[in-house]
Image (cartoon, rainbow, N blue to C red):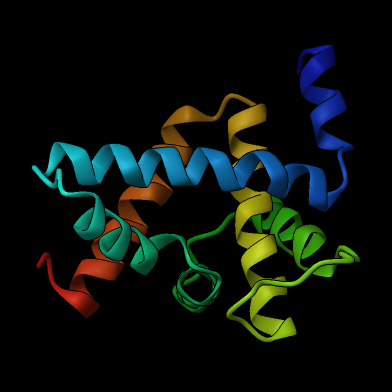
Length: 137
């Protein structure tokens, strides 16, 4: 493990969530554009299925229920979920926001520790799960 990877292992959950939010949103935006979605209103509406606090909380709960996270990934999720934030989401209750923060922390951790293949696997899982529920429309 490189020195920088060790430093990322020690980051607090909110710092991991900060980068994870951006990493996950870019992955979803990239996916939507590649699907041929180009109208801004449509892009925004579709993106919120994936990147809203409610959507992310639902996705992380599904990952846990289906036992697809490694022990380390579950630990990182809990670190993000349990982090004390002084802000909340505009459209989510505190627990939903905390689960979402844990979700984002996981994606931040995978990005910073350069686990690109695993990151892509979890993004693909999220896309598939949302499309099973909402369809591709």
